[in-house]
View (cartoon, rainbow, N blue to C red):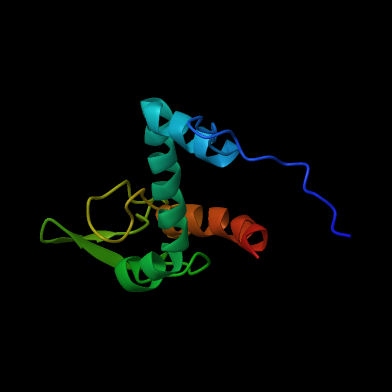
Length: 127
């Protein structure tokens, strides 16, 4: 003998109420919160910048995080400028491809060092 199902269909003329799942409700609430969307976009931009850090270091800045440039010069506004002056003062921030945040006392690019130092702890968490 076959067991009868305990679930009964609603009587004719009565519609059953189907609620949205918890993920659908959460997504609906998230879409209404403009501040949360803005910060999610900011977080995505930061993560994209961190993932593009090796490309920035090799193609745009042309240096690695540990390469010293004590005697090198960069061209700023058509004039060659020492990365580290004879007094030991490093170059300040520039709007050119390299040394966007300036350099340190050893002539290393601070932007490259900052991006790559934040990328290394992030990579194991992505695996």
